[in-house]
Image 1 (tube, rainbow, N blue to C red):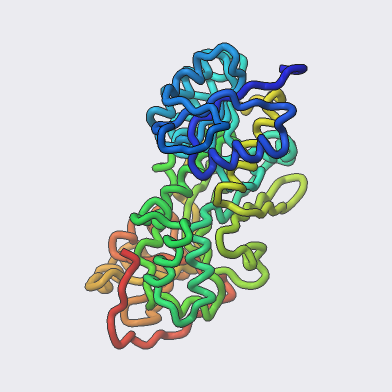
Image 2 (cartoon, rainbow, N blue to C red):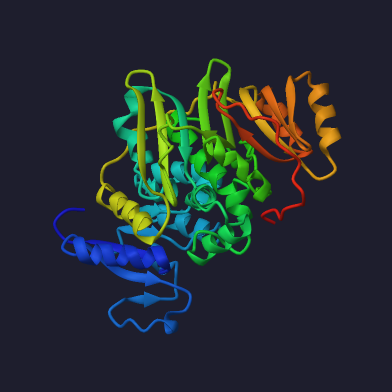
Length: 406
């Protein structure tokens, strides 16, 4: 692929697709040529200099196209399209975390069979080059633990909760929607589904274990409400993704966490993401950058394009490593669902956990196994991990009820 311009087929021309086009035209037009852009409705676009087509699979079958970039999203038709492009021996670059989280193992094998690369840096962490770091620079460092803020929408919401003392949660959500950080149905972000998919992808590159998103317990932010605002007096709330390799296997979980000033993520605000890696040989390293938006995502796609000829080293599947839910969490705050306080306290007692009541419907557990905490979600609207240094005093009962997120 040297000498002449590398010919590219671009599938999708939304926010990210447009930025991919513009970045390539502005900075790499001498090296790359986008020869076709597949979209559903070319007639809706007034641009005259862009080679639009409605025929998505033409990009896969065009013998002159060497690289396909997919930014249409979703499972179908993206899945069939990428499979066909790989079969036609074209390198594929995608930002599709949904697809890679559920079908990555199959697509990686197909790429290997056909001697081409499947690259998807933009599927995790926006502009942060986490997968490249895991594939190349940090491969020998031996990763032991990964902790991250890898959802810009929830980090924006929690940042605003900290800053806007008089704003309601509902007002902050509406602000996030108006800025494009949140969909009309916020479940994908606030229930941790987006983070589950990204963490499943990271697990493969960090530890060589294929993990399905559903194997990772996610403790929801959906029922965050105004009455939880008091937590910001003790630190800053972050929605953290966690992976840790232990002698028993791989611990994986997603949980809101209250952090204090000494934490490396304390000043990671708004839509920014951050990932901390603890390694055997080099200790702790932190990567941070914008985790959402057209430009940051497109930047990672173009970075993959620039490295498309560099075959990443093979990741060996670890057949001995399994996901488990045995991790013991220190000091977790729980707010009971309406009318469920008694049942929550009874369930805590059944498991023999040490707890203290800090409000009419809130308790703090001294320690709790991850699997047990997942069971307690039946009776709790919110769970937040607290640092050992924080001691929450008794909370006075609120005089009236507050609206939850949904």
